[in-house]
Length: 114
Length: 111
Image (cartoon, rainbow over all chains, first blue to last red; front, side, top):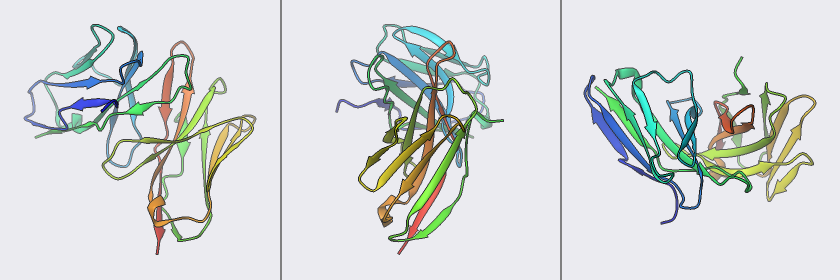
């Protein structure tokens, strides 16, 4: 499978715990995005990498959220001290610079904070 | 005001009907536009890009009006399988390269 891969598909955690999600983009894609989506809403931009550089982080993202893309390939999104309001689908997407700009999504990680 | 706005619907239409969705964007510097389709509990998938001259893909037609800052999607001869949420997407390049999604418009095609 050469699409965007996310792991895990589902995560249930207790409030206050830390969680980490992984995203493997399409191999030649140099841009990687993280989005959050709640029921009835469109995907909300969280952060964006071009290669290993994090170029933008949403103002809505608290300092409990951190993302990395250490070698310009896979990325991780960590949420520290989770809160019930963090419950959402976390979507990763990738695209190739200087191409047709199409954005491809992974299947997402559904987070439930109890 | 949201950067990308859509009527959330739902639009309930009979099979075979023609239905149109609009989407408005606030950033006049936006340069690229797309429609994505999202099925329940699935990830968004690209439906079609939207070009300045308008473009068609089978039963689907997309239009862009830069002067009024809106894009549209027309679906002809609706099928039951068209039932989904349709997301309008705009790329802004003010400093970085960001894809902004609308809230989506729900379509339900009825037998």
